[in-house]
Image 1 (spheres, rainbow, N blue to C red):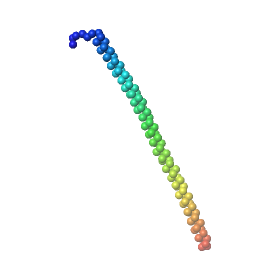
Image 2: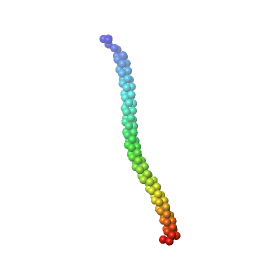
Image 3: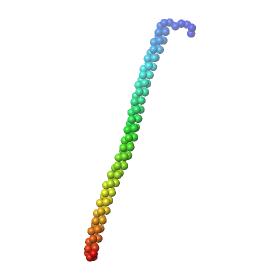
Image 4: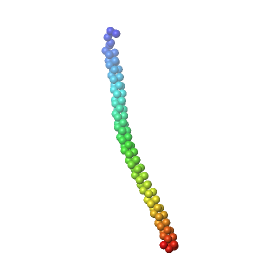
Amino acid sequence: MDTPISRAEHEEFCRRIEEENNRQNKRIELLEENAKRLELLNISIEKLAVNMESMLKELVQQGKRLEILESRDGEMWRKIVSHTITTILGIAIGFIFRKIGM
């Protein structure tokens, strides 16, 4: 190992080291780009999750409002039927009392 190397061998060694460094630098650049893309993707996913949570809350609120509106229609229909039956019974009882003479 104590024998000196020639200038050509040294230059070949330097060239190969430079090629390896360039190859590794390109790989590092690609990894950095991928890391940036992943970071952007994570940010987008986080925003999407926040938006979906907001949409879920709004959907729950709309469901509650829809139930209230649907029950109003049902209550109104029951009131109409109740008043109609009461009116018919009132007319029938009034007619019966009139025939009896009261």
